[in-house]
Image 1: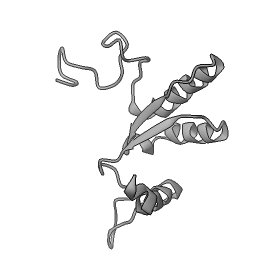
Image 2: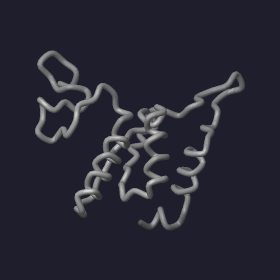
Image 3: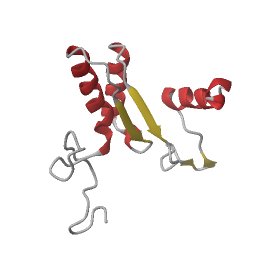
Image 4: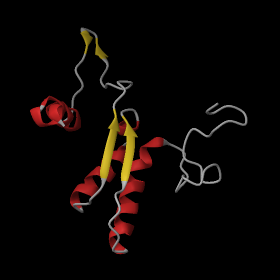
Length: 121
């Protein structure tokens, strides 16, 4: 019933669920929100985990990259889960046929997924 009349919202909506800590209009905000929560946790001297979940489609938005850059710069203790359901693979094609995804993130994730440690964890 998601995104249907009287159904669930497509994104976090505070008045819909006590578990939605914030409201948004698109999905690329999860890492930024998680980083804010991790910073608040640290300032309050707490030790809980903060987990952000983001899909491969949402990873195409600049806000996700900005948040990862800031989290890395701050050396934040933030767990980010990438839900790669293969819905986005840019660039998708050239005139000569399918194209391999390019970029530093794609390269880093490919190396991570191919590593023996990742495969045994």
